[in-house]
Image 1 (cartoon, rainbow, N blue to C red):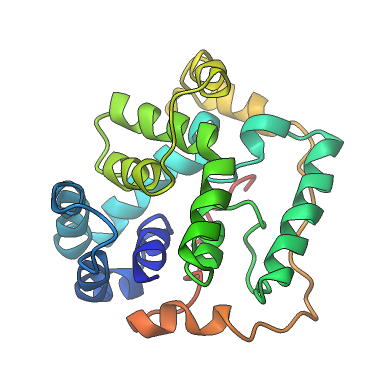
Image 2: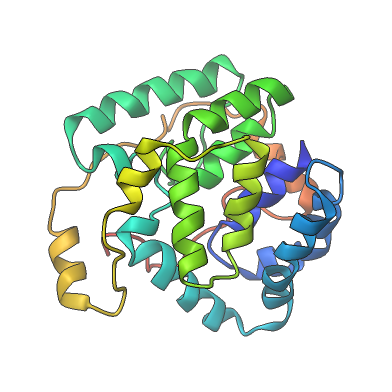
Amino acid sequence: MKTYRALSALLTYPTADLQAAVPAIREALAEGLLPPAQVTAIEPLLNDLETRDIFDLQERYVLLFDRSRTLSLNLFEHIHGESRDRGGAMVDLLETYRAGGFDLVGPELPDHLPVLLEFLSTQPPEQARAILNDAGHIVLALAERLKRRESNYAPVLSALVAMGQIRQSDEAEALLSEADDDPEDLTALDAVWEEAQVTFGPDPDAGCPISRDILAKMDMPLNPARAPHAQGS
């Protein structure tokens, strides 16, 4: 399903490869999984990626997703934080990927939302929807937080809410009850990242018979390399 792949690409760190892939992403979004109104709502982000300076795009991305813990795209961050439970959840998610014929390649954690969406793009529609719905409370909270900030990324998360048929829940309300991070408050940011980080990544010896080809079909590399801004740096 190209729509999942396209939304995954839009949530990755902006690179020249991503900018060059915008026409292919636009074409993928038109495959019919999203209603025209939602595709139109994503157009401002696509236009930004095509026309804005790459360094401005990267700075905006960092402020949103790297400096704002409440907007982290690492899903288990929102429910497990840095607890030991997160490691167990990662193992379970990796087993789900491998059972579906998908092995990770690259530096991102298994619970990174773009990685999850790449996996869903390889799965049958009903199964993909069910898995997305399992993470629904987090996706819904992310969508609402981005709307509050009037971010051009908000329609991407709103599209996922629609695709997963996600409804409001007590779990989502609990996440939204947390105060939004201020990405400009560097003192608070330092305090957040002083906590021990989970060291957990893909098996370096694992093959990747499917995921290597996912974004190649959009003429862009899988999980485009991120600049040295990465979380915790």
